[in-house]
Length: 198
Image (cartoon, one colour):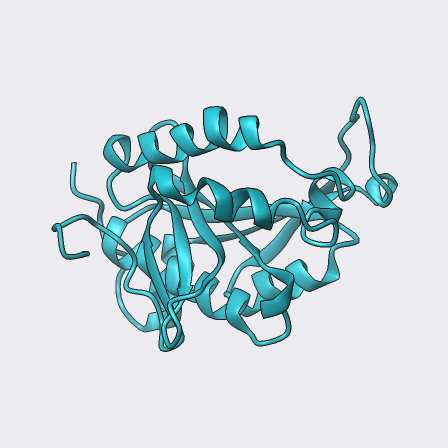
């Protein structure tokens, strides 16, 4: 929890996680303006300011109250306070599952922060929120993200193909889905699976 009693993942030795606010528009626009950051999402196209301000950020802010403990959090360098990107547990409609995601500034790549933050969110999803499954998808050719998902404890469950109106390079190789279920998490921790409070 944060200082206001809100459910926020604990973070890590190097990362502090906090809720987004309306003041984070510029940081999100800058993050999505890097063609390499967006390579496997939009083919490198930036997200327009209006989309971030009027669509994405309001959706993120609305999730906090609808699904306590799930959502998207700003990742800050614990030593400097600098915005490094975001980490997410996007809830399913009933909140029983969460889609793991992250997006980091290119300047922070190669330091293990994606794996570190993803592991913290997986732990939070099962031990605090009590979801039954954490899953993630990425392009089959996105080797870096696939390694992060595996290091976070998720396993590859399928490769599938989607018809896109405007495919980006690599689409022809398909998408991959990874998952980790509550029973598997509990077994890896050497304890019974937690039950979600209803």
